[in-house]
Length: 205
Ligand SMILES: [Zn+2]
Image (cartoon, rainbow, N blue to C red; front, side):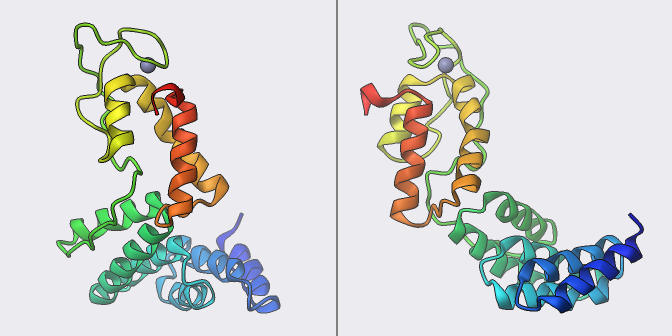
C-alpha cells in the first residue's frame, strides 16, 4: 500500500478513537516506515501516555528519536523501555532495545532475574551415560544450567540440548499468548508449569 495512504488511514483511526493506543501506534509506525521521523515522535509518545507498558512503542520511539538526531533522548527512552519490557516479560523488544543501547555505547539497565531463557545455548555436549528423559535418546547434554535454581538444575541433569532448544520458541509463545508477566510470582509459576509439562519433567519435580 502507498505509504501516504497508510498514513492517512491511521491518522483517521487515531483521530476517530484518540484513547485507543493502537491507532497512534500504527500511525507512528507508518511515519517511521515512510521515513517521516519527526512526525512519528508524537504518535509514539501518545501510545506510551495511554499505555505505559507498551514496550514496543518505547523501542520504536527510541529508534525514531535517534533518526531525528536526538540520541540522548533516544537513550533515555530505550533505557526506560528495557525496564518496562523486562518488567512485563517482553523479552524480544527488551533484548532489541538492549542491543541498540550497547551498540551506542550506552549503559543497559540490569534485567531482573527470571527463569526466562535469555540466550541459552542449544549446542549439545556428548556425555557418556547421559540419556534425555524426554526423548529417551543419548543426545547432547546442555553445556550448563539453562538458568539458576532447582528447575534449571533438573533440566541440566535430565534434558538434552535439542529438547531444550525446542522449548525456547514454545516458551516465548506461551508468554505472548497467555500474556504472562514473568516478574510476578503467578506468571513465573505458570511459565514453569508449562515448561515442566513440555519437557516431561513431572516425575523428577
Ligand atoms: Zn531430548
